[in-house]
Length: 262
Ligand SMILES: Nc1ncnc2c1ncn2[C@@H]1O[C@H](COP(=O)(O)OP(=O)(O)O)[C@@H](O)[C@H]1O
Ligand SMILES: Cc1ncsc1CCOP(=O)(O)O
Ligand SMILES: [Mg+2]
Image (cartoon, rainbow, N blue to C red):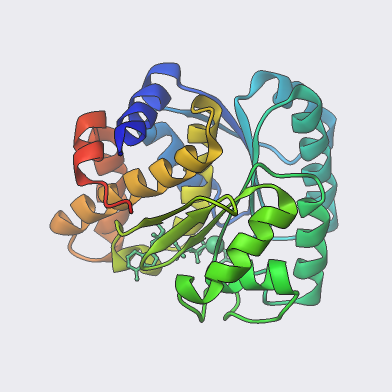
């Protein structure tokens, strides 16, 4: 059942995929460090001028709309076009989609570019599927179960894998659904922890052919690393360092054994 978790951990480390991130100003460093700790290579760029070349070089693209500007939107749309031309999987993180009408408009535009995977918290997935405002800025005010129906509807409509993260994470392609119970509340006290997870999903999508398994496996591995980090962390600061250490030392069989996927 969890064989794909071991496979994903090992293949990311062995194949070291390059992941192109068009991400936000808060998430840049943590996302790059999470990718490196897991064995992948990050590049952060929102320049439309190099989007096509980066798509050809990369295993996957991650688009995260956390700090929106007109220039960013232009860069993201060029990157999506590049990934589609190159046939590379791309992952959307609709940060704060419930917060403002502008975010909902851009999220809907990006969704039309056919992401293979969408990862957000419950408020973001509800906003994306139902056009509803909600959440508290970039944070969710709902649990993942509240967005389960919206996630399935979004997955079917967008023909994408949709992940709703929270205390329990839900991953669905509209017909098959996984629930993942790994993780730790200290993640909610670390800015950009969700963004960095989306970046990691990009690395898994670059090496595993099934986007449902890539998404569920990356979420489980990240949650396991968080659990191990929390055992030694003294608070939110040392937790981040311990999370990177734990991701770096996680091996495939251990990840498969500790994954709580139903
Ligand atoms: N209450 C919680 N307990 C354990 N893990 C959590 C909890 N809330 C979120 N997580 C984990 O934190 C990570 C980021 O998820 P989330 O907080 O939903 O994203 P975002 O930061 O985008 O709002 C995920 O790995 C998720 O499983
Ligand atoms: C605080 C903040 N503001 C804009 S993007 C961002 C980071 C959000 O990170 P996450 O979605 O992982 O909590
Ligand atoms: Mg987020």
